[in-house]
Length: 268
Image (cartoon, rainbow, N blue to C red):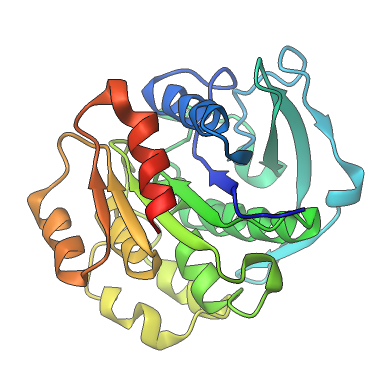
């Protein structure tokens, strides 16, 4: 089967599993791409507020069971799946009790204030890419949205660059309006280095505060193209993309968003 219309959407939130504007965007983009002739599969974290019974999630045993090591600690990877209705798009959930159980102190569904967000992002990145490999479903475009998916472009470029599952795929990163409400752990870059990311690729970030802006810039550096759908995005970040010379899209008409994305993906 040809894969020239396959899009892998790696999201932070998707409705109806979570609610809010970012979740609504996750669902609308997936269904909008399918309606425009693309074959779509999606990933999101299995945050603790996702109701498994109501949304009919079930574990995929053949994809689960991998241990992901972060900072010398083993974390088992559990993969669950559901079908997004009415489109029947497959949604794969990355799950682990260490990182995704609901905490009473969580500021929001994604836990943007958690002290372990650096490790949660690393786990989501590793878990998603390892699972995508096992699916043997090679996409032509890999789209990432939100700070939770911001390491995907870097890992694809540096740690999965020889993997045939992703060979030739164009990576697109969307800058959304959701933000971390607390900085990442100060050892974040050290943990990336321990995970195999070359020092040369993260050295430029060592003087920056490990926050949402840094994650955006890291994602932009290793993506093929960028989309801005945050109306309050900083002019500095837009200038950062312009200076890179990479194709970019600014969403200024929500009613035409799916059409804009479809044309942008086709142009890459």
